[in-house]
Length: 197
Image (cartoon, rainbow, N blue to C red; front, side):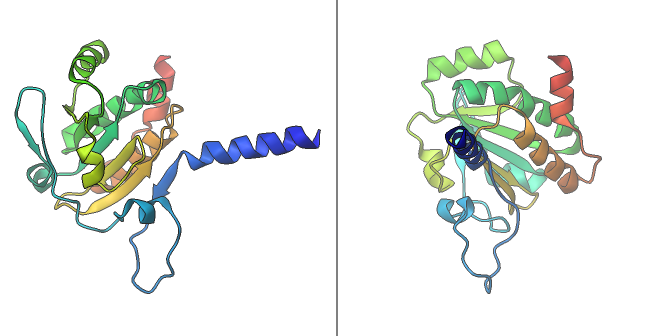
């Protein structure tokens, strides 16, 4: 019985470790915390890195240009089972706030043909690019997949969320943060997607 309880506790901790948030700006006087933001090298409140990538048609997606107009959600992802299940929530998040100025950019670390088929199948309605070599992960100083960077208008990082959460809670948390940035009522993207299942 003790073994079963310990195994459940370890499993719960591992599941929680998959979802890590960086919400607070780093304070100069604060002691260093061994969190995912510190490991990634980027922190909330920092200026987002310079980031340009070409979409499948060859058009340049420029983070500086996009964030000059409004908030941008950059999602570094793949087409694995977890990210696939989570995509529906991120599409709902994009739909909920694109009228308020949010731009969503999905960067896939997959072969070109696979992504193009995936985009058609999922009817992806947001900017996307393919980075099979993983250069975008280097730019955003992370190895975690997926990694989500919410960039406010003007280019400062407003939130960072790491890991895969097929339940939709991570997307819901980001949705609440986007609502604050654009000054609108939060949309519960988890509830809206789950109601359609």
